[in-house]
Length: 481
Picture (cartoon, one colour):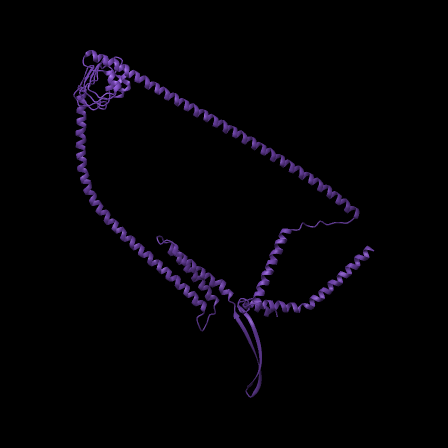
């Protein structure tokens, strides 16, 4: 019985049925009795599904997923070859599992051969695609080299043209520099002692760039800038503190620089034939003779000093306003810093109070634990005294592991429910004809037959237990009496 149970539940073959036939055969003129045993068996399919069919299918899915890998590198081919070798190893394992001889090709071998062929085709496709990409890259490199050679030829021509252009520019710059140097030399020639005569030079501005030291020539007494195209005077004109005679006749001046008020030695000024501002034109007058030119110098200085005073007052106001704004900014900064400092103080105080409360809570918890410990010790002492009076030795039982036992009980209950559900599905549904349900049905039948066989043993065990219980109760009653 035990060997039949092993054949039905274990090993590669599934035992289904065994029939015994008794027949009489006439051989050699004698009637002979023959006993024929017919054993029906079937190979278990779960072994091949789990160990071969599913892994080969997973490898095929991996091979198909390799199409998402870029073709630019060599990782794709390596990946495909690795998967193909894995399928080959599985095929070698299949050759060990299948029978050595067979009249026809097994379906599982055809399945494996088909998947192997698909993976081989995908590998060949990858090789062809990478070959075409490399060929295209080589052709693009050749075209790029040709374009580069053409650009180099054109670049040589452009360099020749640029060289000629550069030579022309150098000649022009040298000529311009020479002309500027000659102009500077001519302007310096206009300075003689403490006088400068720049009249009739067609100047649009005072040549402070060509003569950077012009406004620093404090020894100048007379400057003639008449009959030019001047539209403005340099802002540092007031540095000519020794200037006494200034001729600005027939220019295009509309105003004078504010530093003009610093020319305290100025005694003669001619601003005739200039489109001056109304206030400045009124102060300048006509300048028709020597006397009017002297009066022009005095009045224009007074006018420019008034403008200087206005500018100074405006500057002072601006400075005061800037100082006030700076003070306001500083006050706001101090106020913000004070608020931040106060906030930090509050945070520190709150943190200190929080730590104090945590410390008090910890001390209270420690005191409560000590008090509870004292109560438990007192309770243990009382229980010990009561046990000594009754002279009953009470053995302390280990603490039950409720959580672990509960989890084990729940796991066993779920496992039993799952097994019962599988047995019911394979027993009472259409799945009982499936190959996977056959061993379940056989196991259920064997269990039921075993339970029927053990019915007598169970009854005897129950009778023995009931007799022992009666004897125990009678003995306990007798000891009490």
